[in-house]
Image (cartoon, rainbow, N blue to C red):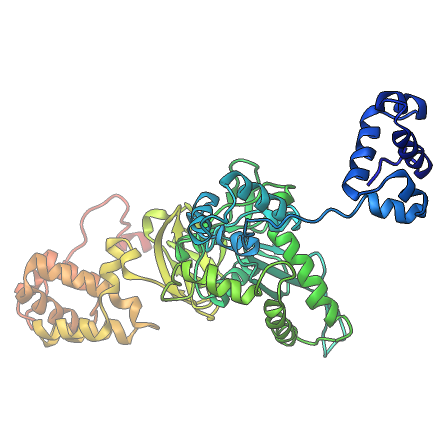
Length: 514
């Protein structure tokens, strides 16, 4: 095409002066106010088109321009263009580089392949036409991004009519954009962890990294460099073998995948549910699940396939296996071990090792169990009990003296006493029968056992027989009889009596009353 500053009249005048042959190209250019190179260019175009001044005079401006400046014939390229969309997907596989893809492309199209530098440049130009979030390269099976949407869904209590706002959790895999969403009543630590577990079960495996934000529910102390995570998030990481890499606070560029996924869920799922009314979380999640399946099946606009097909070919083969059991979601509560080596929860008392009396511990509570944690170590575990005022006591938590007491029952004590003799058994039975609770007689019976070890079973049996004869079958009487040696006297023998009172200044005597 001619330079815009060169009008058709100047082109005709140039052809006329060239035809006359009286002026040089430089002189013609100076005369018409154009450059010598422009004059040379017009002369060249006329020569190629086979036009002289006489032929040009018979043509209109449009015809003359069409003859001089014919459209350039595109030169057939000898290079074959790569499949850039396929290259973009292949780059997400671990270890795949542009160098490797170029070598494969060159081997497939020998003689028609671009050089490596042109290959890379053309791919980068193609990739720049994608959205920025799509231009980032994520390895397959590597990262799972999670967040909560800003938009909520109204929930109506059918009984009271009260309206609450359900929170919407969103998760997305980096390589395939495979998306998961569900609703929860709040954004507490238990809600976060329950949703992450549901996501892992939805995708059927475990990626290498979990990338959450740093909400207070998950981070005890948010920090750009060394955030301190919640105890429950640590348990999730250990149970599933999943490393946690929190995004920096107020840095959405650290997790653009889930930022885009949240927008997609809000536009393609929540917007479609805006006219529906939900009375339960289960009904809401059922509606979300149906639309979620449709979302993952929607074809990509600039890439082949859809989220589901990309997940099946990229992420799914590289996910780690799920553990054999699902992690139980727990809540944690600080407590102090009382002097009776028990901790209290909801009115029930659970034992802890007696060495922890007065110490602060942490309770880990699930739907079925209560665990006592000292630092990171579990020192006690009990089945959760609904009985208020009752005790759950493990024998190994008791001091040795209490443990010895606990080992005995009324039947065992009576059996022991019968092994010594009828009198001893009668005294033990008396201890059990005369108490409001048999346990109250345990200590007296244990005292009788000590006397048996000290004086022998034969003397203990004799002492118990004498205690019965004087109607005092208790521990103190038996101990006094053994100390005084009265067990060695016949029961029918009179006991020594004192016939006269000893002289003493505090005794008045019978004369005092006369």
